[in-house]
Image 1 (spheres, rainbow, N blue to C red):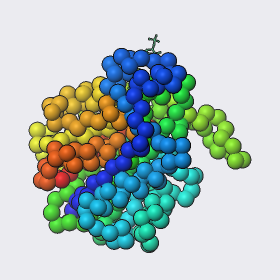
Image 2: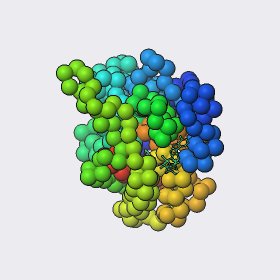
Image 3: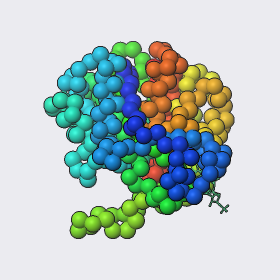
Length: 319
Ligand code: UT7
């Protein structure tokens, strides 16, 4: 018994914002700095009323459409997000209502930029246990809402978006191995440290980051967890057809691939166009490469996430 991806979908909000647009809006930066340090040229930002569940709904609809199945046949919905619409109910319950599904288990997972890999691993375990058969696994974020637009070291890096997969019980191979990790002692290097108290946000409500510490941690964690997943599935790194790492920075992506011994032509890269969409980045990149024909059935794909917590993980699948 396996769990297998039978549909993918994604959604980007309509406003495409270039580096020049950010400068025009008053951010003290340059296109040259952003491109050379991160590889980012554009990002998509949600409209004022657009929420994570809105983006997640659109991505889910497309994944269901690709799979050719109806929303009411789904029995598990997991949304990975650090920017849910509300404190509660979960974004997953809101997506369920929009899809017209009744009765599926629905909940959110919060593992920041590694959230989608965590959610996929959880859905896989539900399916392998036999308790559920068809899961929508979604990564959706509106990080633009938690950015300090006066902090040029962070506000140029992130964008909004959503990606989704439909995962089903299957006799044919799908997910071959997963590995998840966290190190909470590193929580200070990437966080939104505000609290809610008495109906008010107290403390700092914006994303704060020690960029260089995150950079170093990310490269080591992504390379190690990828190798761990290959070992668990008993395959060599050279058997991987596509690597889809979290899309935070082209230098992190290149260094990870180099460390793992994966050539650049086998790496899916969307960071230039999307920026860092946190939990949405991996499913967004997966959907893009499936729809443009790069990823085909039978190919081996390694998905990797790393983010606040600190959290990191990988899933190796035969597509
Ligand atoms: O999902 C995980 C989330 N986060 C990440 O993956 C981020 C990981 N870290 C990084 O990607 C990089 O550390 C950054 C892109 C954030 C920064 O690159 P860096 O090469 O580590 O630069 P730095 O922080 O050492 O800053 C170098 C200089 C500083 O100026 P001084 O002190 O050398 O004069 C900054 O003030 O660049 C300056 N700087 C900027 N200049 C123009 C910082 N941000 C900007 C900016 N535009 N947007």
